[in-house]
Length: 276
DNA sequence: ACTCGTGTTAGCTG
DNA sequence: TCAGCTAACACGAG
Image (spheres, rainbow, N blue to C red):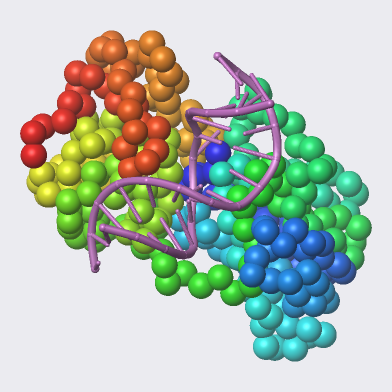
């Protein structure tokens, strides 16, 4: 589920509903999700503070925290990553729950309390929960951003060309490399390549600067559309990403394969690989 | 019962 | 340094 647009929805949820509330307690008992911390470490670091800002680069979120007892020195940053299927749930003081980060599809599995992997209990009686069936999400203190490239929404055309065109890797694998461009996941990569009419398996050294520019525009358009419609699964081509699917533009058969280790779909007519 | 696939990432290997 | 593979997790489908 969560690619950049879903994570942005979760970030806004935290920014709108969780900031400024005093943290009374923290459940950090899931040592896999909270690795490398030990149980109680996140609680000890956060209790008595409040979240003061919710930030994001690509699919990584982090919250700034207040000092203790009005101290001017801020607390640690709280890093949150939704992994493959994490969602954020914020419960207000009166018990109203709001959700962000998951698919907005009606068929989506309902949230189960046993999937709660990390919980902040606020002094007002509400809470913030990371719900994550697969436990591939992650919560950690002071995560750092050194391993991430520029955010997919903010990368400039010149930066994009430099980051994308170097080397010999398949262009889809390069798009998925968070250290180059942060925020593109499997579905968004397929959607952007389809919009740009580029073969996912094309080696980046076979692309021209104009291809990179077209891909960046396609990526930005796919991002804008996903943000407006409520998630990457609303992409124009995503519904055709199934056996027997046909290209929504030209009607040709969609093909399926593995690129960069991920399940990949492309239009057999418009996205054929050029020999390198 | 077993195997495969899934919207992510980190770490290992050649 | 770069590119490709695998494991970490849980669970539904075939």
